[in-house]
Image 1 (cartoon, rainbow, N blue to C red):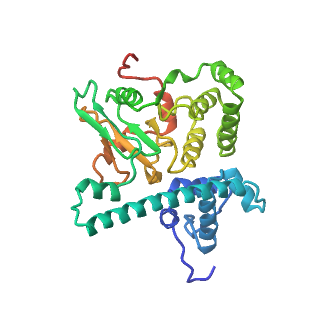
Image 2: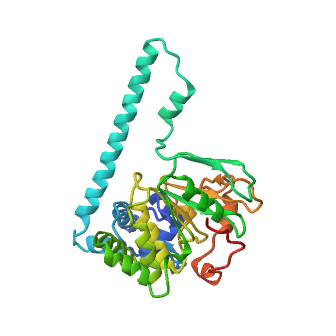
Image 3: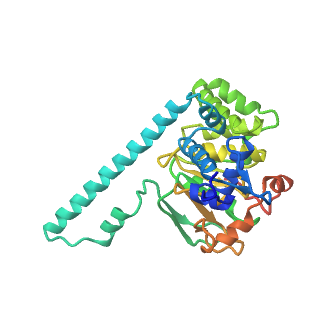
Length: 344
């Protein structure tokens, strides 16, 4: 390396690549990139390491698992074609969305040319994101009937809050109020996984989807388990219009949680909405939250649930961060509840 070559520390490299520092460390752990070491022994990334990491990040953005990335980097292109096909589909969906937006602009310009005054709602619909699914209802106890509205529902919405904050009540109400939605409770898995396996045996199409999702997640380092299979059986069921999942991390170790959220992010911006209750920072890594994700915080003081931006300094950010814990800590408190409401 020439003396003038720029060398970045891990945080600078992650920022330049647009990934989290945790993701960069995972690339290293899987042997995909090897950072250089400074004289003091610190990790660093020069031009060659940055080029390699950028290639990994690009392949991950296409939806490849880390195992698939390793094979592509080793010269085996298997897995690239379906990933590229999925990416092409997402781009074509964006093109269709832009075409619709252009028609809206054209119609508004025509209205202006005819002397019509535009209402604020016209402009809001033009510049705001499309909101095919919206929900509004009076909040249950402990909020005392305050009005709650959720617009522009993201493909992934995390529901976060401390024990006793009411997030389970909110989740149940969301499942009731969203037409066609389903609530996925903690009873989704029994000890031997018999219920999930019976359902998969009765539905070969669903089984094929679950097997594919499970293979991707296992390639990314997860250990197969009854809890993971039971969760995927519900997540891959295409019947409900939206899913509200109670404590996604239940029964999953850290590699499974990290691989699961990576797999869910592959679905793209047009995917069916998922509401994921969690207190695990392996699932909700605040540094990795993307544009197709949102965070709902249920505060400890029973203020109404609010949407929180995943940026330090944003209102509610610190409260969200204090609710999250590593998977090993979550495992020690698994099953601990402040109060569980009855399901009607």
